[in-house]
Length: 398
Image 1 (cartoon, rainbow, N blue to C red):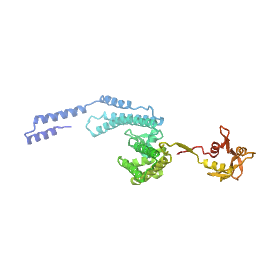
Image 2 (cartoon, helix red, strand yellow):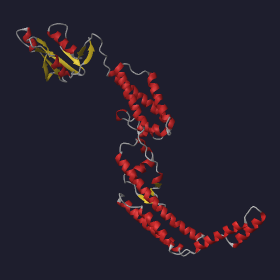
Image 3 (cartoon, rainbow, N blue to C red):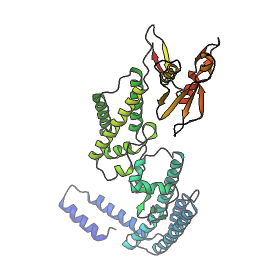
Image 4 (cartoon, helix red, strand yellow):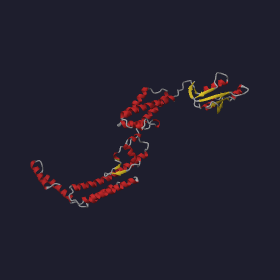
């Protein structure tokens, strides 16, 4: 507050410089004094407006959608804040000198309470928004969050598992962490989606042309992955996400134990190696599923692996260089020539048995021959394929 001595010092200053208007400086001094006096004469009626401001701040806070224990914490906080505010207001209203430190400290308490209510209202909504987001997008978050404590606490809070309190500034606290300072959980990386498309494309390409990816192509694809990682802001986090989040076929390239504790350089090497291996496997799968394109003038034929076996038994029955027993995998099949007066009768009574473990014939058998539409005995290939489980042919060209 300006005093008479302030004005005297102002007059002395004017005497030192002809550029300062004495009347103007004295006028400013009187204006400052008048303002201070007016403030000092304020009455208790001023607090009606201030308390209205507090009530407005309290209106912003409600307990809707909070868990019961959280609602209790909020109510206790508002009640304590209201009492604290009222006590400070009561003391401040009795102080005439509003420029004093004591008065300013009390006003600060009142303002802090008011601000804390507004902070509480905002953070309560932030928590409700987080809960809604986690509930609506349960599969949208990265597996890397399990490596970070902040993310785990965030999820616990969003799922209502955390015990929340409020500090004096109106910030929600769980454990020793303020909710507002928690690191938001990471979403799944777009790199995983992109590499899945690359893996699918690699399989389709090899299946179409029948040529597996070369070592140079595998290396080039892996280097492309690393380049994508290096374009992100957080190389470590992105690499962790790539390894832990599901990729092709819903599998992850590494376990949490393999990722935890490793630095960026180690993880990039691991990511590159695992990606190349998966790409190589997709290439091999495409080669296996490759079907040679039809050539002009050629025809597809179905080839069964057991056709040569049944032909060998047919030769045995006809007295040629065939065999009585054949093996298919771990199974053994034996032909037993039937009885009859004619060769045709013998053939129609000939059976093929699946031998049991002790080498004896069992109940699983078929007739080696059947008659075609014209009544001519032919090999019973269809039943033999069923007996051996050879029901899916390979397509070849004549």
